[in-house]
Structures are given as C-alpha cells and as structure tokens.
Amino acid sequence: MVAQLVFNALSIAALLFLAFVLWSGVGKKRPLVGRGFGTVCGGLAVFLIWQSFELLS
Image (cartoon, rainbow, N blue to C red; front, side, top):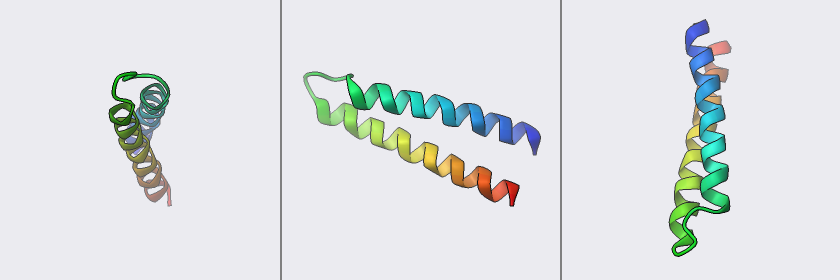
C-alpha cells in the first residue's frame, strides 16, 4: 500500500509537470496538439489523485 502511494505521488508530480509544459509552450506550430496532450496528462493526474484517495479511504 505504501509503495503504491509513493508511486502514485511521483506519477502525479510527473504528470502535472508534463501537463504544464505541454499546455504552456510545446507545439508553437500546432498549439492544439500540445494543449490536447496537456489536457490528457492533467486528466490522468486527476485520475491518480482519485485512485490514491480511494486507496486511503
């Protein structure tokens, strides 16, 4: 359980960082592609937050 929480926390941090980078500046030629992938990364981070909450409760 503790290992899964640590893995989820590190994954959440990495996904949020990747979402920020993709949303803010990657893909100057095609900004919708970067924003799309940024949204997907943010959604995955929210999903992992929800899974961590379910694991704790």
